[in-house]
Amino acid sequence: MAKRYSRVVLIGVDGAGIFFNQAETPCMDKLFENGSETYKALTSIPTISGECWGSMIHGVGPQVHKITNSIASSKRYDTESKYPSFFRVIRENYPEAKLASFCNWDPINFGIVEEGLDVHKASTEDEPLTGRIIKYINETDFDVIFVQFDSVDGAGHENGYGTKGHLDQITLVDGLIGKIADTLEAKGWLEDTLFVVTADHGGTPEGGHGGETDAEKIIYIGVRGKGVIKGEMSPNELVRVNDLAAIVLYGMGLDIPESWEAKVPQGIFA
Image 1: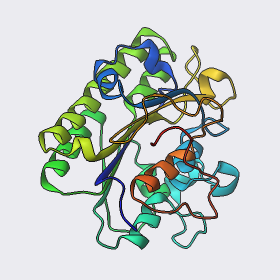
Image 2 (image 1 turned 180 degrees about the horizontal axis):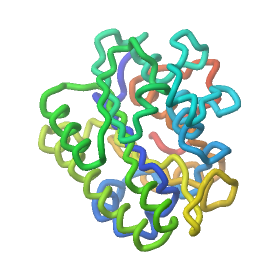
Image 3 (image 1 turned 180 degrees about the vertical axis):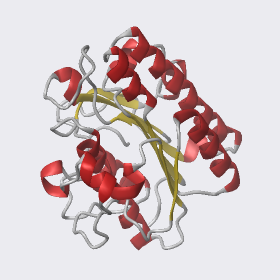
């Protein structure tokens, strides 16, 4: 068992759907210019945060992991579940791994990422959260960082998804993603980091989500790192939000649990 990458960073932008391609995103454009990307990935149904983040982190759909917003806000995830998070799989295989979860939406750290795994957790607004991420990177030779930014979803609810207010917030968060990448580059770590950016769901022009329209259920995934094939990700097969958990484990050189529905999409890695 050997890690394929020294580090993995998975950044999820809540409520961004595939609206990255309508917003000004100079940092992501540069990051993924030689990466693998798709604007056709399918998130979980219903297109609600608890269900979608649960799928991304636990590698199975909502009908299996059973996480909802209210459950994630009030109940800890079962540490003995046969549907472990990627954090638990990594911890069980790498006891000394440095793992971190930085989330604006606190129910992820409370009720989706299991307790007792020695995962460094922090929850605050997007911009101060980025400061904490940068401080952690500068002070810690980490293995995996998960990030959830929430302000884009807030802008979508307030202004409508795909509106100027929503897209402007994506541009702002693009700058935060750029700061994280710049910090890795300054440390000499970016090239050997599997760096992934995605969304949990999109939304409608009226400011809602939870349904099955394309604007709500289709999401972006971008992957970059050494050995990543430039171009469209898996053009001939459906990529699902659960598959992000498998991508993280691939980067860590670990097998996918048999209980997961997740797979590593074809055409990402040479």
